[in-house]
Image (cartoon, rainbow, N blue to C red; front, top):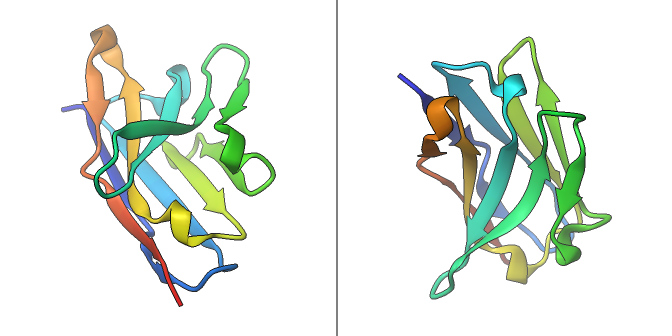
Length: 117
């Protein structure tokens, strides 16, 4: 069964850091493009960062550049999102995503990040 499970969210003060993890199972994550999305309260879901499967190219949404880092651990079949200098506007539910085996649109359950003093 193809599955993504996120963890690492929590409450952090402005300027703080968090590291989100996405554990993949049922497929080899390194063979697929992997994404981090987020959805703030009352907003639509937006792409935050992407790491491709072909050449490990990385894309960041503009507000993430210089603050967020996406990476893979092939041995652990996992993808990470290191987030620095967090601001209240980063508060959202963060999701791991892939079009995995057979192009199946696969989402995790999300992990909540709250940035507040």
